[in-house]
Image (tube, rainbow, N blue to C red; front, top):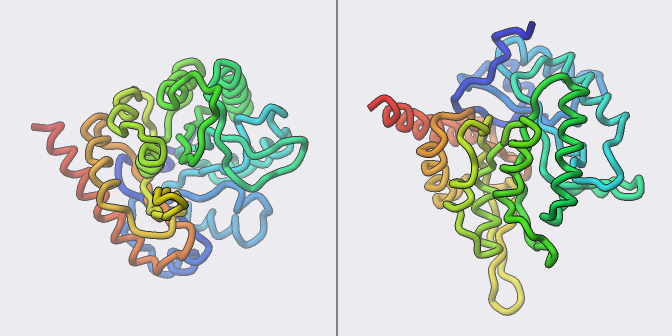
Length: 285
């Protein structure tokens, strides 16, 4: 039986980064929960011992970036075993992965690459999600990607694709609101349509992050999901829409590049917490 203290609450948390390990241990800040990248703790040693110490005081979610659920090569058995080892050791409240691929011909490309949204790809992703959940003996969440190009032969809207994966496999959805906004701007999608296609019952977590606006040739603008800035006002507004549709959900603020002082991340989490509280009052009214 899992430790009930591991449950991730419908509150605001922050991504745990190596730069903040010492501060977390020394100050034990008032934050509801933490999310750690699974691959950062597969090597054992001081890193995972620190995460175990932090886990004594905070619920933890494990977020994977390297399983490559969309790979045509199939799942990498050794990598899946390493994920299981970290899951058993940390006993996280949530486990998540990306709807993407990153391995081809045995080569790891170190990026979260977009999938062709086709029936063939859908079958493949569902097969890999089923395999992962059976191997870990628990539900996982899958995160919608940010993207900058689309395959011409895609036949399924991304929001319908991820909803179908959840329906067919019983997995949950990690709804990255920043990714929805970035992709909607880049491709001309309606972000509200994306949210409306997702079942509230499937949403297990929400991500928020900052992104960068780049000007490219021809005067066009491209939004890059670099997790290096504060959450944009437009993303906060879309997050409020998500809360209105899904209700209060565990929400994480990510910051992976140009990582600021811990206090900055805690401030962003406080903003998310205020919006969650507003959503809770709206549900109660």
